[in-house]
Length: 396
Image 1: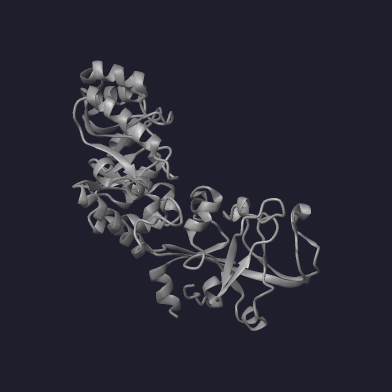
Image 2: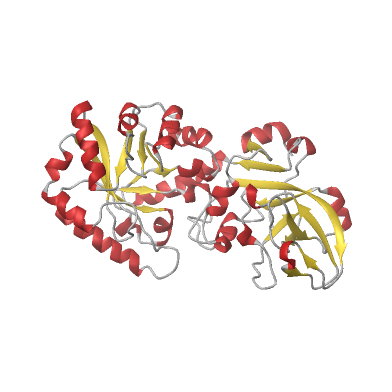
């Protein structure tokens, strides 16, 4: 186990939750991905959508720009506009992957945001707008059978035949696609997508290509799949395909969350805990209430019930405290039976995410990185710090 961070009461103030964001660790993790890109002479962009999964663009983007990042990917135009405010530099290219929604053309153009076009209709609309308002860049997203964002095969056929007509007033930056079945050990579908992509590319004029993101950079052969540009996102904040497959043993945690506890009490063996009486204690049990719940992003899927045990825990100074019962709106119940009284008296909080409760472990149980995006949202219950700010105020 790693060291348990000592949090003074004044750091919490009037709030029950503390969030600490390590921006230097994000930069460190980016450099691990850049090494993978350099190996194949590829560029390394960064995906900052969902406010960098709670690490916050306002702090992360300038730090990444300072170490040479030039390609920044967000989801929606509104995120791109905020990022452009943060990075008002001509060499910082910002790409909005959700595409060009109706009425957004002038915002893209005026702020030099580059749309990742997801249909022929969007490409035609952007091309016509640029014909009337000046040439601008575009990325063409090719849907390699994910059947989500991007041009499908029949649209690729049309584009191939009428390429000049659809692109006469735009500058194509690159083509892109996205893997849909990368998490496990069977990567058959990844190779099928790669074959579809190559079929598309054979029909289209030559431009750079971006396909690989965090999971594919870690799990697949970089020499085959890195292509021209890689796009790590969740990997920047310490994520990976699973808890056992980080980008490197040197990858760092970037996100810590500590939550106050209250009401340590004892219940008898056989009694039930929480809503629905869904968990039955197997012994006389001391429990504590942790002041975080699903409205704070601590997902209900992490709940511990008799019928669906998950094994999720929080941490206090050398002790794992199992969750018991259903996670409710603002409270989670944990078992503190094995924690010495002296430890319970010394600490009035637990680590929910951090060096002793790996976010990759929670993501494996929750099924995706929904947990980090949820915990990273703005929340009035949270006292939010960068690690640099926290350390300057409360070094320990």
